[in-house]
Length: 307
Length: 307
Image (cartoon, rainbow over all chains, first blue to last red; front, top):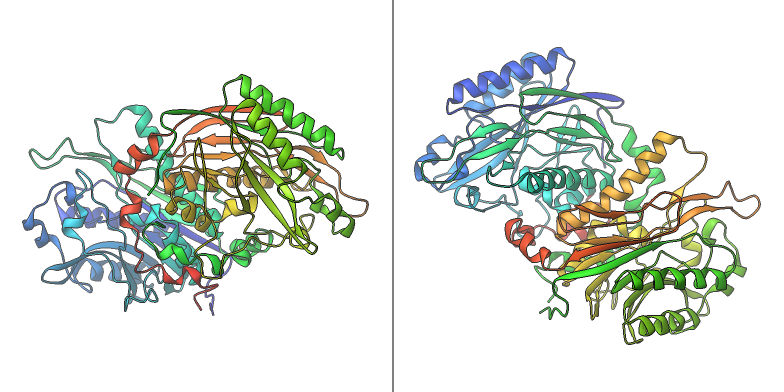
């Protein structure tokens, strides 16, 4: 079913950056970092979640919907032009206006020829104090409500990409569905950080959990994972809390969960990894989890609770 | 739905031991270590996979079926008497003879009053060179083939135990189904080790993957994980390879994947952890993954491949 287009070593970069209130500045900065990745040989570059704007979900504000844009639209077209100019694949992240009243948190995949290879609308939407995403983002469609269409990877010249977004990264179901659809890697554009008030032990546990659960998806599915995350402190609107310290630590790991590259906690960085795209196949021969899945006994996974 | 019987701190032990060809020696050794755990205050003790025997799956030998026994049977009754004498819950692991031609790799849960609280028959059965489990073990039932009955936790005086076995530990589906059925912890009696011929880097990746994927289940389900694993070299039957170096490293982690205790690579050990059984509830309030599952879009999880 899967016509692999890329074999061997794939140089791939994840980028972590600070964002300001100035969209033009942010996109220009992304472009600079993407060009740097291209110079270092990257054929795939992944940006963090909502890289064109500050993380605007720290409060609920109807004016924020003005930041949304269609796809294709200015940001996706700018990324597409850059992908074509540099002849590489870019995964970007856009606050998508689908129509009045329907907005999504959407990853876009731009092919090396400048075309839109595909998109993924975030399926799992978080919501907690300071992270009011359910106010802004309609969840991605499940298709015809038959569970057949969601969590579909995007075919590109560098492989079949299992693109998910941030909160999806805590859900083994999402990773598995991408793997079963032939994804050759899992990709999680992310914006996650600490509340400044949390103590250091709690912060360490949260960061370690974020890394470990994603490395767990790599291992359970024998797939590489690419996870760029934003860095820097972003203040909250007045009265809406202490802001968020985005924790960086963007990383790429291989299909045994092994480390390939990991970013710092505070700096903007281009992190390049050499992904061995043949390795998934060889790992699946000695750790054949997919052979032994008990599909006859998994029916309750579509239950909310087995009560 | 879940009437919790235990609240607060639960002292729980995982035991790793070497096994010989002498079943009586192995069981006496387990008893000694269980008594030690009881003296240290444990109210729950978990033994490794197939603790009464060597790991007999290194070759395919019909005579090995003589090692199997019914449940209740000699080993389960011995563990039951010990559970009653020490007033604690024991999770053991037995090569179960269900009838001629139907054998299972079964975990048993013995209540502190000596009763059989429940059992779990290993659902995912591995098979690779030196690990010929498909020859010996019929997979656990999926119930009436409706996906409703398998992966059910066992209720005990120390909580609702999500007991799984070894190879199950690589399957996020198994952990999730236990969590959705109200399991308060995940338990994986294990026998896993290295082929002596593997190089040190590969050995390190495998051990780290084994730990990480299970810590990932803890994180994704906000549940503690208890994983005892056998230690020591066990030779293979003549002509059946170089044997297995069981890697120990038994561990217990909390519901954020945080370390509570971890064993050595070579020694027999009783590893005691203090599990805060209230912590799952509080973690689930700030990391509410279960709230946001896309049960409308998970239907394909019962497909072998989405092709």
